[in-house]
Image 1 (spheres, rainbow, N blue to C red):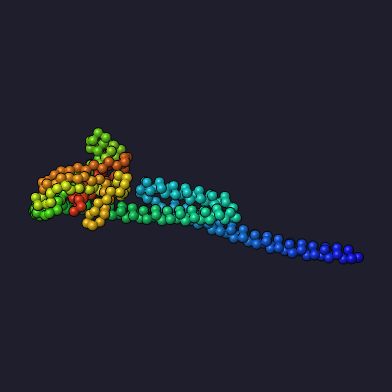
Image 2: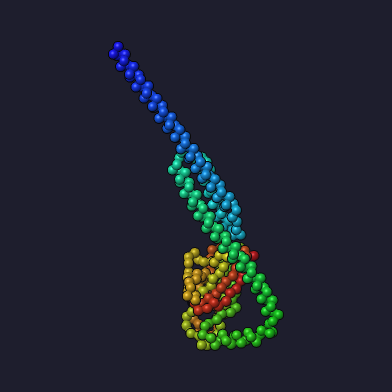
Length: 288
């Protein structure tokens, strides 16, 4: 009898333990399902944000071919990231966190492209406005040439008595591999800027460095692969090429060559010429 009582007691205890274990396992199962649901919600939200970023990238466009190539590369990165997220289990939290960081990086890159596109659009509007204004001024100058001749002569006399060396006749020309002028972008190997330093008997004589800044059809300043800087009016400016000349007060013709990395783009090139004292002039070149 006593053994039977002990056996019943053991059975009752085991049954109670089984009930408790079943309850705990049930609670853990419910909790696990709740966590998985939350992770699935996070994965869905992350995927939605990536799809939105993909849509934002699709909405970006530019007239700059180089920038468009970069945008295509970034769009492909976003598409690949979306596919990787879809193939990743929601329970793989470390991977999803890694994808969140990549998403943040791609967003930052996109903001940079938006700024570049805005800058280029602003520049294009400004260039069109300046071109229209220049044509209007050229027409007006032609009509008033006789009237302004006396004023031009007086201005020339004022330049001669000034202490700052002036320039004139800025010309930008493309040179081919045979060192001959060309207007074809496919044949251009380097760009030549020529101008005259005007005679000035009272200007300081001695060596002077002349700087040129050449801008391509895409609005980007041409450089030799590294920043070359000079100071003008207290500000530092990047230049494309430079040359030192020995100015002795008499008019002198100089040419400065820019040897970049062909091929050159088709379109309108512009050049500005400076010394550290003044802007000597500007010119344009149309390559076809």
